[in-house]
Image (cartoon, rainbow, N blue to C red):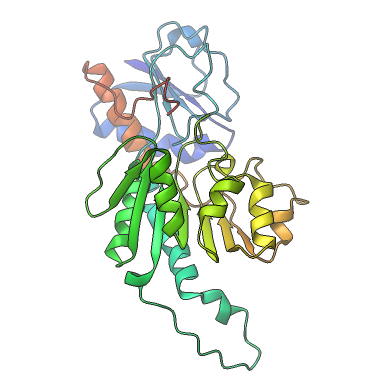
Length: 309
């Protein structure tokens, strides 16, 4: 019998206890799952970074820390976390992100807001272009970015993708490196940010990068708040270089009530809902990783500490 510690904010245990128990049973793993194991007795930690656990020094027999979050920037630098760390990649996260991204890209492509906010008796006969004539750029071609790029391409959008290192995604014209970023930005009428937060990606959409976007471009960010220079974004919106920004992630969350994003007419704020971890699907990923760990197989979705994700 292995000991699995669930460490997450209060309230999450009620959501995860049953799905995790069932998933471990289905995986054939005999586990004592609890929120109160002694650190020295723990074999695996199921972990959310905002759950209060930050010192892993006493977890001397722990084989792996299995995060419930896709992003690991808040924990990857923890010097006490010396055991393997796996991030969350699961079908529920991917499907949720694809649905949110395609919904907002379609919203801006069709200019739905024009009619939602224009119920004033004016017959606006603006006709959108077809998707094949709309250029969309996706920055970040990991599991989420690749899935979103392919979903948009399946709707016939003209999609290009960018990553820091070279990647290949079926059906997508892929670019990488600084020159590749310039190429993608220069053509993107709608740009979607799905990069991890690392020292190399912070403020990747700064004033200079925003200036490379076409006049009237739209920014959609469900990735990480720190990918964008907030002041540069607001300046570009005020100058009408950018038409709109739809933002799901922010440097401070919840977004402070006095932040200018709330009141800006060209900004849409959504409360970090683009891709919430669903307990049922996340539990299956956790259980599979524990099964693999106990069988001596490589864990899924291991974090590269040097790369930061």
